[in-house]
Image (cartoon, rainbow, N blue to C red; front, side, top):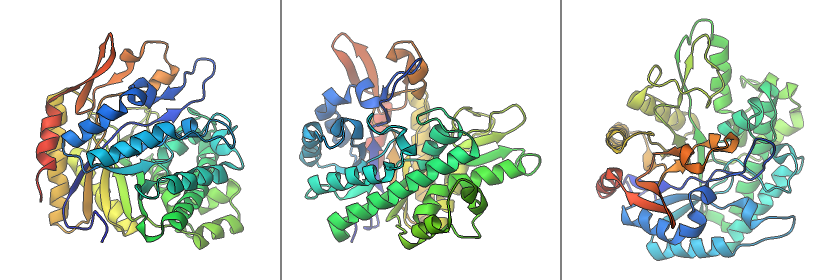
Length: 413
């Protein structure tokens, strides 16, 4: 029996692990572990997760740190952190790709050998920690990768348009499949794969003038997961688009022949960001416009998306990220409402096995990468612990969300 199959709702947390080490004119490297001082405070941070009752922690291995040059591997920092997981009794669910590659991979996801480089990293990680780590998320939020690195030309390799979206999705999907199959070869039946993607709803002019765009973006939101699970055939709504981007019969057949499945399908849902407002004058590339409160679907949207992913992929589902960026009392209200929604779904027979508040402590907005202001100007108040600037660095100070999370995590239902 898998650890999540005991009938309980399992509570976990995440530490924001966006890594985009590339920099250039007007662009700083974005490494959330550096910004939040997690590289220095990891021992304390894992203790904080355990202290509020988290059973698992979504945590990323920084590929650019452990593999700084071709054939060079430096594991000492990760070794210490993984050992600490065992000390505090929190289960690591390992993120392997959270938006960035090492600097030496030119053109990042557009490099022709990206899938094999990524699979090599995944297999080496699985081999090194085979005695202690068995839960993996190969690629976090492939939809956001494809939008920001492909369609919107916002992050490296800065492709653009529908073709850019497709090319990033195809590269990610191939790397995803090779990584998961490689990890499974190392760990056998002990391996558990938590697939995680951002989720997307629509409001406003959905059935009128924006009907075609809604249909395209809805299909795009599932594209990478559809590819890795072998669901892209001649009847798929993006089949013609993928072929126009270079996906031939052989490549699409390869995905079907080498399909991998989620043991758990992770859904990331943010009530103020996961709904795309379809109105004239709104930029319709997910992630750049916050439509709240006009489009905020709240727990209704959360329940709809969890049902959608459970039905589409036929696996147990987990809420793998959620929160609101606001004052502690607003965060507590969303925590209570979203936990109640998840419990309702379970009562109705939807196989929801986990709930994840993201993140454990505050993080810094991705726009920091293109800003010139100090990090404190980009702080996002999202966590159970506030990040507070002090002469000695960033203190972690508990706020009321920590106590409320501990309350929910202690409920055995």
